[in-house]
Each structure stands twice: as structure tokens, then as C-alpha cells.
Length: 225
Length: 92
Picture (cartoon, each protein chain N blue to C red):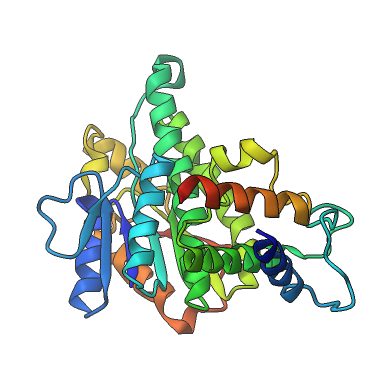
């Protein structure tokens, strides 16, 4: 079974649908699971206790977990000096701590499976240092650092941990960003074109495949950075 | 409770490569004098989880609540045993 967070929309939903279409056993986690077409459970990943509840449920079901895709995330485009503290805390709590909670609590289930793959999500904003995304970028830079260290901790257990860092992908997260701004960011990628969620799904598929088991602790930029 | 001590220490011993080491309350599990490497420490946690399941409770080795009670339950075999027994008593 592969657990995907942020499964109700955006990249998380696209990834769930792709893996489901491949016949893989997908289990989605998100705050709202009312419209899910695949097995899901309600979970706010920014809450350690809620993630722990999910883990206890999965343990009771005796499911073998071979993958974790931490696609849940929030963004708020603001200059750092105009970002309210509650917004900063929410971004760090969800993007960084949520990823850490899922990794630390779900990894033992993957260890019991004798190995697997964990994917965290960052952003091209970390490499480019985009204006107006300071707090979001800080949360994702934390995810990249965590991924590198955690990959070493998991290597002995045959678990690969990598980070996918897309450029602007057409999802809800881009709401509020103008077409001009998107073009400006895309033009700074190595491959200067906007990729679709499908390109990210391809990368997830690749990282779940045994043929990518030499990759760990890496940040993979969709579009190149 | 004597059986629990014997069983927990046996589980710790199973994770150590040097089988001549005798486990007692003061055996260090983390730090410079530790008898376990980081990989073995994780395996020990999973083994204790399994043992707790047999005993009918959930062994929690990461939460604030568990860690604040014992500073670090992994300091010594004795502190780990104490936290294990505490959780067993409170959940049963």
C-alpha cells in the first residue's frame, strides 16, 4: 500500500488517481475525504496525534506499507514583512512539521515491510529564492534538509527518501499568482516550460519503481533548477 | 512484573551483536557508552511495539507525553523498562 497525503486535491489527488489507475493499493490522507474515489482517511497532518491515529488504524488492518508520498502542503504568497504570525505558523506546521510527523510515524511501518520509498515535496522557490514566498520557501527548505538527513537514517532499512521540487504546476496552489508571474518563474527553469501534474506523477512512479533504488537523499526538480 | 523485566531485557539483548554483554538497569542504550547503534535502536523499538501488542497495549516511543515522563526513556535499559511498564499499567 502507498500512502498519499493531501489526497483531496491538487498534486496529491492527481498522484492518487495515477497510482490507482495503475492498480496500486492507494490510501489517501486529507482533511476532507468526502469525495474520494479510493480508500482514504481524514487526517490533518499538522497534528501529530491525528497522524498517530492513522498509523494505529493501519497497523490494526495489517497493511503492508511500501510507500509514502507527502504531497500535502499549503502556500500563502506574501512579503515576509506583511505575513501575519498565525499564517507563518500554519505554513511551517503543515509543510514542515506535517512532513516530519508523517515520515517519523509512518516510516516504522515501511521498515516492517523491509523497505520502500518516501517522497517529500519541495518547490523550485527554494532554489530560486522567489520574492513574496519567503515563509513558504523557508518551510520547503526545511523539508529539503530533513529529507537529506532522514534519507541517511533510513538507508540501513532499505528505504529511499527523496524530495520532488516542482516549478509552477497548474494546481490550486497557484491561485492568486498572475500568468506573468508564472511565466517569469518558468523562464528561470532549466527547461523553460510549465509542466502538468502528470509530469510529477511520472516522477512519483519512477521513485516507487525498484529501478530507482540507487536514488536517495536527492532533490529532484521538475523542469530543472 | 519480573517476567516483563526478563522479557524486555531479553529483547534488548537480542539487538546487541556482542552476546557476552549482560543487560542490567544501568546498561546505556544511547550516548557514548551505548550498546546499540541507531539501526539497532529502531529495531528495538519495533520489537517492543510487537511485545506490547502481545500484552494488549500500544507502546508509544515518540510522543511528548512519553518522552517528558522519562526525559529520554532510552537512557538506560532500566529507564526503558520503567517507561514500558508505566505505559502497560496506564493503558490496561
